[in-house]
Amino acid sequence: MSIVCGFDVHRAQITFDLVDQRSGEVRVGRIEPATREGLRSWLAGLDASRLRVALEATTGWRFVVEELERAGARAQLAEPAETRALRGPKRRAKTDRADARHLRELLAREAIPESWIPPEHLQELRALVRLRHSLAAERRVWLQRVQAQIFHQGAPPVRGRLLGPGGAASTAPLSPAGRDLVACAERVCATLERELAELDGRLRVWARAHPACRALRKLYGVGPIIAVTLYAEIGDPRRLGSSRKLVRLAGLDVTVSESADKRSPGRLSRQGAPVLRWAAYEAALSASRAASPDRRDYQLLRERMGHGRATLTIARKILRRAHHLLVSVGDDLLRPLPEH
Image: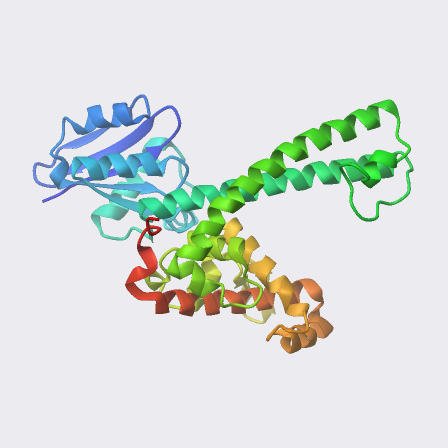
């Protein structure tokens, strides 16, 4: 008989709800501090070989899973949205203890909506591609801030390069404070561009060397960075069962609310990995090019529903193709980057 336990993980503490199915012992409490050392100390008082723990796949799960597995326990990640839905529509008290108990009860009856635990090298790669995405987004915010300042002060619209020597911002008629903003933006963007260049170099190594990334680059519109991003965010598509589920993983599935003869317009769920959604959309933007195999479909869709929705439709197609390509890679899919 197992020891089943639910964890509700927070930065300061981990609330647990534990039941020993052999002895019937029930334990509820907190692990403080919520660190590797604190968790190791708590595990030392249990028969970890019988311990099964359920926790939600939210920030902090990685070190908890690693420590549980190191001790010989079994960890199961629960998909947060589906776990919350299993509580039902009825309003109930929402506390850390209630969340831990809910996870423990789902685990005891084998009803955990599991979330995949990637191997370590894939977790590391995900951290890198998400860092790159954040840096690129921050650079875009600074460029937009400069453009807004130029417009706010009545300068002519920007054409061509914005920052740097010869950039439009350097010659725009701005006030002293506006000029200070541009100078600050140039310094920040220069730093961000150096970081992005270094990260891109590391990610391109993956794109060249890993069989999964090489397979994804066969897709039109998928370059080295997009290929690595797709691989890092998708991981092993064989766990999903179908390409339609990959579209759902990206949050590109269309939700529908229907009752009797009433039906609301479908909307994107956006309940998925935002970086995966971005990568699929970026690849789909190439569908408007003359050489794209999806150009005809894109044109027909654009005439009917506009550029944005047409591109989203192509993005779904790319994800379905990516699913089949990754499955075809076989057992090499989850091996680490080959040593050079």
